[in-house]
Figure 1 (cartoon, rainbow, N blue to C red):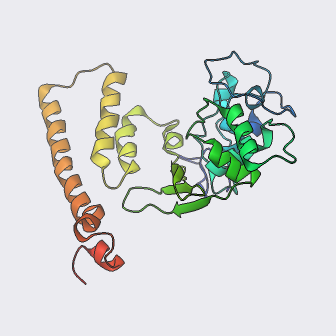
Figure 2: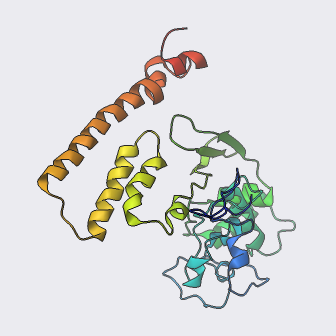
Figure 3: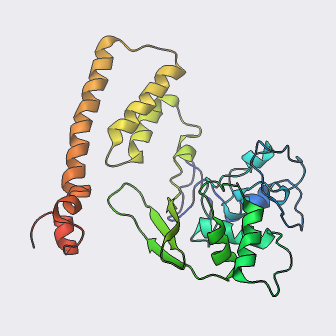
Length: 287
């Protein structure tokens, strides 16, 4: 996908399928830290060491998601010596950001010569390297590293995509170990909405109208959140009548939102059961 075009009077309209504010490469490619051909013997949390500001954070043992994250942010986190947390989503051509990151970690782990080692011995070495480390944005266990990176242990993957009955797109990845137990589970939101980019260069007073478009189910909540942000921005305290009008709007939204959820989103499955025919679940009535 191409980076989105300009907006406003005289600006070009972004092409269909564009990723607004994002590029086609990775955060690693726009990061100024020096890249090294080095393996990792130990991972660290960000408060455990003071990393070298010139060297790649991942190669210093700090889990940085830059290698598995789409560029476009200007590598702002690595610029201040903090690891990328993957907020721009997977780069072009990558469907599963988590699997991409696990694969990258597996390629840099220093567990020595694995020749003639048993699966258990390899697993023990991997455990020793990542002991006590929690990978952001989701925990990556040694089981996942063994299965996805070294191919030594069989793991079953269950994918639920897309997740329905919510605003936007979601995906759930469930990994089962050799015994059929859940070893790891991930909730992913793969789409880039780009609302931050819509707001750049616009008047602050436009924010409530723009933010209400975030969700077609709960626009009132986003509208009021943006309105309260304006209150703080302009350092004003609305009069009592205005506060009551806002409260009335939100109470009306509360009623309609719960009604929508009950009759159109979660209610049909809850009332009819997941084993009924798909059409019956979605319609909420008997076939």
